[in-house]
Image (tube, rainbow, N blue to C red; front, side):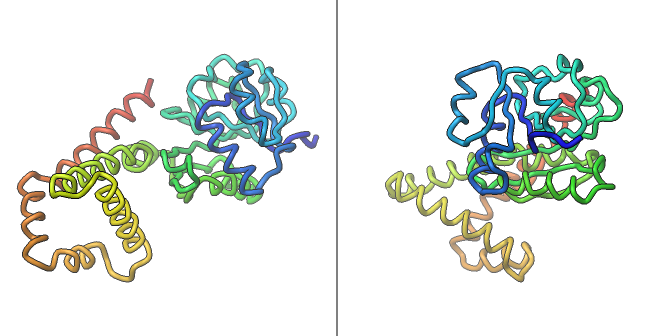
Length: 265
């Protein structure tokens, strides 16, 4: 039987709102085709302007929506097994697909697991997603990909790699922002105003990222090109003496390790 709504959303916190805004504002899906459930009137009020339909009963979402999105860890998925879910998109951190299936109490539910990062909140993020449960349906994989494309670049990966996705990309904004802040401090210490240093640092990282993504040279070749000159080599020496590359790599590794521990609970 055809469902009344294309997408249902249970829990209307930050990440759910991020995805909803991306979907509706990009015109991928009209608000009237989305049913949002939350017991908080305040949270529902925050998405009213998107034209979505709203309710306070998750059973209505399970019954009337073709796909159901879980994106906020405040929702107790383990308490929702009184309803029959068929197609689930789960963006709750550290929740494995099998855990979701066990919580929902049915072996027939299909789950796409995804990991978002902070830039998704402005439509410029990266999303790692495992859609292997839906591999037999082009329509399903296409719909899920299009939903996530509304908030960033989508990379399809096997769930066995999802902890690494979280350690590198899902939490990578924290490392990048710390590096950005350190660059700004260096500029200020050199005599620039805070605003001047921020503009230069932000645009340098943005431009470098664009160059890495779209340039024809490898990262090693670009690095060699960027490192020409005695002044920059003095800076590189300091980074190497302080094990910059090793420190970053170890930070990612520790994040992956902790993510595995949390996912196993």
